[in-house]
Image 1 (cartoon, rainbow, N blue to C red):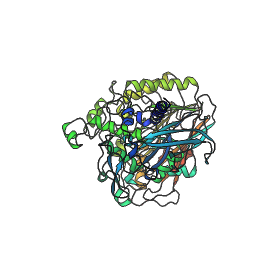
Image 2 (image 1 turned 90 degrees about the vertical axis):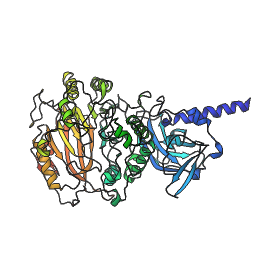
Image 3 (image 1 turned 90 degrees about the horizontal axis):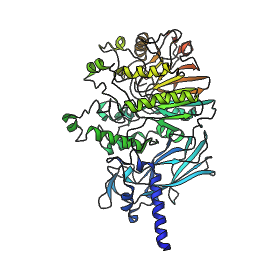
Image 4 (image 1 turned 180 degrees about the vertical axis):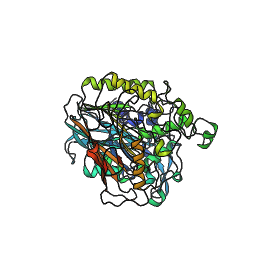
Length: 614
């Protein structure tokens, strides 16, 4: 009897340890193509095939994300090889894995890998406040994602993983919980990133905030990876940064391997190790210009089906989504909605961070390059939506809830630029707008403006990435509300759109700073609400948020061809509470690069990358 109770106790403990690894239930526990049956994984467990601790490595560091007041998500990967798993199907107890380090095949065990984790208030991990055990296996690419609990609000913690009953430990990570919604908080700082393209250069921008230790959390607005083949563009071969697998990616293995390749960048590893991330995907985590029913390359046609090796649009999207949830320190918001990534965070009484998915969730057809005229013709159709009815209603309710609870600010993470961007003068296009942005979904944008104005919701800060350039605008409902470009009167908030970590300028890979700034001048003059624009620099921006104001600091990276800590302060902006517009003079009247409406561009004596790789 005691022996039976011992067995049952072990089974219960093992089941709990499987369940504690959230990746076994993510991105959808019940989806027929994504859900994993834990009882089947347990059933095929063969302890005789178990790896010894010295056969396992923490291959890609540690990460944390989606912080709450009492909990945070912790991530790592513990595996017998740096290569990734090709499927979750085992044959006769083993799946061959190729170890690129030894150039040999190794046998993958059907026994799960046991990992312990500890969370403490100190770097020595002497004051442990939470700990636990989790299993991982080839089914989820040996990733581990757990929720650390029993934490205190707005507190820094240190954490570490360990192979069970061994001295094999991961690097030490640092993270931070958020304040409770009711807590009065005076200052919180965010680093905002987007568009990191591995073969285009080193991710220096990620590492600079670590070196400065200048923010509390990291917000990533998408294009964390790119799905392109190496030969599509980039300097990967000359920089020693080839995206693996070296082809356009479609399969689950492909997406896992691409994430793993990006996670070898040391500055990205450092950022994940030191800050809690709040990420959302853009399009390239799946495919270029993705929408509800396809993408620019795959449109459920026979040609696209053959070209991608028989992987359908839906299967490709599911492969990408599954790998993203396996590799990113992100919560599963809705276990029955495998595509839901839109969610919100209440950061004390200071602000609500509302993260949208304007790409993959339920977006109407977008500009696929060959249908631009058609999208132009229907861009103001009332039935077009960027996010689908369910998300759109949630978005408006979140805005209202935030205002009703008295949060000082509403920070809205939208992958693509919200403000109008008339580019006809700069680009000479017949169609003056980028219809893949909010300009292609005018009715959706009008509904958003209507909700803000009709409910008197102010102090709105829109964030955007995607464009590989920097844009700062007053939020203006053109054609419906009066606006004074000199004073900002009539605006309902401000938009800060950031450039890329490494992806090239939309004006060209080898553009000079003089030509880029001339292009920025043309663009700014063609858009009343646009106050500053820069086409030249790669980089990021920081938001320093207080009850009285939001300060945005833009930083440019002089070169991404080498790993370095160089950066230039490009421009600083202020939004005062209750004013709903950029403080005048905008940016204090002086910026380092680009073009500033009513101001000056003053460049210091710096060395620019003569090949245009800024």
